[in-house]
Image (cartoon, rainbow, N blue to C red):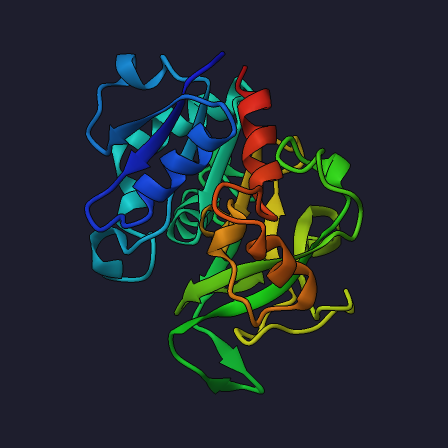
Length: 255
């Protein structure tokens, strides 16, 4: 079984939850600091860039972290088709690096995560439960254990989460997770975006703004979310949560 490296930048704050999520599905994960050597870095078969506020989100979210040498290691790992998952701040870092969608080798940025905005008005930092659905699970190594249009609860926790793509880039081709209501109907999220997560064309890189690592166990769900998930929570600690399947798929892809 290949180990997964969870990359810690100054300001990361979700690295330990992410490691726990990987270990909960039988995977092995280590914390990799931002200044790890290239030799050690490439001993891993998959990588997660977790959530947080790398370098205090100075300039803009993810901008400073994306300029560090470790990003060149990630680009090399992408060429080897290793699975790479960016969550929240990690999603922003992948966008700034060009790893999401597909252009890191050309040193181009074709996607940005901009401040939350609804009806053309800024809404600031959001931290709340939302619903998303899985779009074309066959597109990505992270989603094969989901069914098409599975509707899942997840935690949104960000100030710059509105996906903006360069003209000519098709969101339909790259979107793997989209916002919806509890019935699965498409909707613009509270942050002003339809898109919750994108994958690259090869399917080995996924950038998602909400936090799947916070919903790996059923006991992490609030009772007031819905009857279905309240019932799952009542089964007790240790029960599978809605996003266990994503980390299970990543572990399989890194094997």
